[in-house]
Length: 111
Image 1 (tube, rainbow, N blue to C red):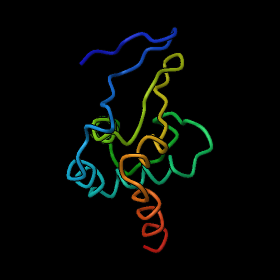
Image 2: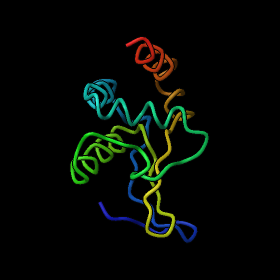
Image 3: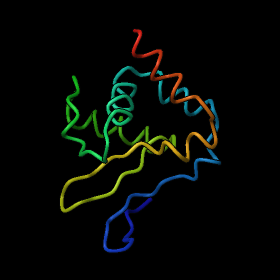
Image 4: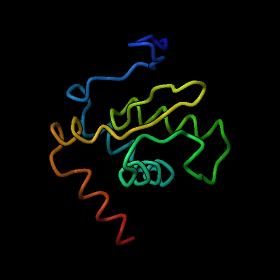
């Protein structure tokens, strides 16, 4: 899938959250690096660039983790200049999976 232009922004493709199954979401979140990314985005008041989140993996591996999260419908990515920005699709996700993100964040706070 190719990156598209939308309102002057380059935007990678994003799936409709309503078409994502719970299995895909849980498989995306089984990895601790991806849970860390989701946790950081959950706490962020606005979108953040990929490099802002410190991860214990290489840049190419981080790119893979962001891709998995995007394909699972958890995050929205877009470019600002040369920076790829990331935001949690919280409202859309809560509509399809009510309470799941809140429960995951509460359990990761305890861990």
